[in-house]
Length: 87
Image 1 (tube, rainbow, N blue to C red):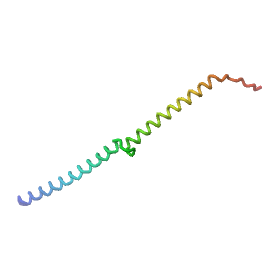
Image 2: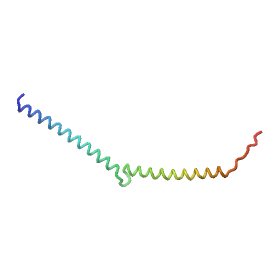
Image 3: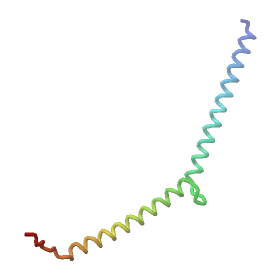
Image 4: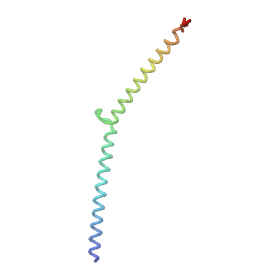
């Protein structure tokens, strides 16, 4: 191979590497942009908004369970135990 053939080969190989690297960079940037958009709150459709809604619902359910638990405990403490009349 002559010097010009080697130069053409190296330039071709470099061009291919640059094109592949550019494509990978574009894909990575678009994936990160999509992930960033999902993690920012918007009109309720993002992942962050959904997680926030689930957290608030979970807190409300926990409060209701606590209230029910206290009611049941008060009822059990206030109610005297009956002796069974099994002979």
